[in-house]
Length: 114
Image (cartoon, rainbow, N blue to C red):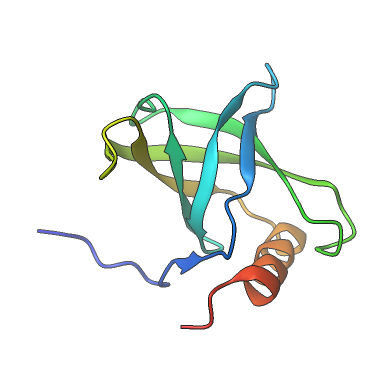
């Protein structure tokens, strides 16, 4: 049985790059996001039940910051419709009010109007 989300995820008009905070390696591209979770598409599967320390490059007009750093727990990883990629679902950990505002601004500026 599939668990319902409290907040529907919002797709953005372009994929933002997401990096590992420690290594600086790109781990994937943001597909959709809420203040509670996100989905990344990546070239390799992400390990479920693991906490990742990530950062995302932001467009300059969002929050007046270049990046948003956050911790996220990977809930699942599945093959994408394109077999060269993987879809990975994450729950955001301990999002403070400033980070939540940045995410809301990002969605307002770059989210599909559906």
